[in-house]
Length: 167
Image (cartoon, rainbow, N blue to C red; front, side, top):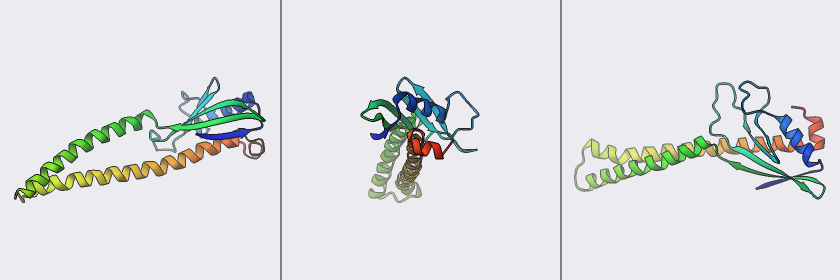
């Protein structure tokens, strides 16, 4: 959990955060964040670039509470539902592919050196390499999106930065 302290009141922080994001139902918007305020919670994710889907980006959940000198914002991230479903699918697919690979290794060890046996051994390796590459790309993009979301929240609730940066 990431904590951001602000000298602004809770109501002012929520008002600024609300102004920072387009509502989720707005298909076309000018703001870089899509989200909204619900009670003392602010939810947002990054608007995708042109011709880019953003189903893999993290969702920021920020709770705004009164603090000693203003407001305290507790930020956390969660994956979008699509990424949870992809992760479940990859686990089941990996289990099936690995069991096929074990079958291929058994065939090769028993003396069957046909191309089909070798392919049964190599396909799981290729699948696992692809899955590892996908995870690597997801982690890099997710880290960039998290940084972008945190900076957007910091700029919205920081008095000095909000005067200098008007988005």
